[in-house]
Image (cartoon, helix red, strand yellow):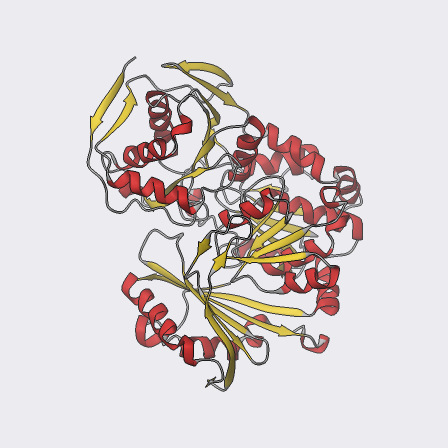
Amino acid sequence: MAVLTFATTPFLDQKPGTSGLRKKVTTFSQPHYLENFVQAIFNAVPALKGGLLVVGGDGRYFNDGAIQTLLRMAAANGVGKVIVGRHGLLSTPAASLLIRRHGAVGGIILSASHNPGGPEGDFGIKFNAANGGPAPERLTEAMHAASQVLQCFYCSDSQDIDLGSLGRSQLEAMQVEVIDPVADYAGLMQTLVDFDAIRDWLRAGHRVRLDALHAVGGPYAVKLFEDLLGAPLGSVRNAAPQTDFAGEHPDPNPVHCAGLVAHMMGSGAADFAAAFDGDADRNMILGRGCVVTPSDSLAILAANARTLPQFRDGLPGVARSMPTSRAVDVVAARLGFDCYETPTGWKYFGNLLDAGRIALCGEESYGTGASHVREKDGIWAALAWLNLLAVRRQPVAEIVREHWASYGRHCYSRHDYEGLPLAAGEAVMATLRGKLAALPGQTVHGLQVSLADDFSYTDPVDGTVSGQQGIWVALADGSRAVFRLSGTGTEGATLRVYLERYLADVAQHAQPAQAALAEVARFAAQLGDITALTGRVRADVVT
């Protein structure tokens, strides 16, 4: 074996987004593209030299070869030890746990999360810091800066490591330990959730249906729900990870999980269902005849936190991303704990969690998490809901209705305009910013604006300021519209429009969300000149 030096030149498009660098597989397959960004990580994180690194991915296409390249480069850059999941698999929350449990310098996660896979699909790579959470902006900026001045990268000429067998091996001077990707995570879950209560609930005849969407969450779900909790064999569907997710979109929302939604709306529905995304950090929660919005899920878990052993002493606080509905704010105000509003991106929750200011957090994009790791955690969210059902002994839909009756209903929806030319998406945002100062007091499409702002966040722990994080417009009746360009896609731009309307009157709670939000949706489309600036007369995906 030998360490080789390869001359290279920078790629101008290697700026990480909210969850690392995501591009098409065809982009990552270019000579030196993956190697350049990996080398930029090593250059930006000098503590990795001689340190411990956790490595894993969601098993999508290109994952196997990328991990072998990463391991050879880690050895060439002097990493002391790498812990890697068997077959290169690790869910994102499991990777966060391993970083924290083993005191690693950080972790490299190969995943494009909820984006499609396969040879024509997407691939991604991100670095998680020593706290187990996504790299903060100062670190992703350092990686980008390093990638732009790169002149060479280092790589061992060693053979591939056998990632199918548990155990330790040597690569140059670096030790490689292949571990069971599920064991540590499953052990932790049993300390956070009342498994005995859930087993009793299942033995009483209740049925569950979990959909792993052919992704990495499958082995975790089988181990926890079938092997440890005793749900019948087959309760977990699509459990075998596939490199192309069987040609499906591994995004747990009603649009991409239409079959699961149809099952839960039918006469033979299970009592509880959940779906998980590509790297098992996102979740969708369903009950019989009921799809729970992510915003409501966060609020209901917060209101019932003490039913979980993890939160038996209560919550110090909660946090949500700015576009997420304010349902959890109402819970926090009534129950007397803090509520923080952050930009979109899980990294913004990290300081709050590390400082002990919050123990529960969530985003509208089907992400829910807690203080046990520094990532959103889809499997945990499903277990937390099962714990709640086992304690309250009520159907999901009844729990949701009672929550609305007590706290009011925050009708909520997200309208995505996908694959826009970047210039069109930026034009909408620029148009909105140009209107902001004069908006308060104006009437648009029959609705009066009370407040409007371009969201800026000052981290209460370290004082870091993050500006231009999305435009929000509040209406006199308490409704809200939020606009932002997404940083998680790989093609063009995605304009996301978030709509919210608060309904205090129980008599109004049964109406469909899109009907309740129709006027707010027309207001938002007119305010942003969306049709004129993008050519789109309707959103591509409505959730």
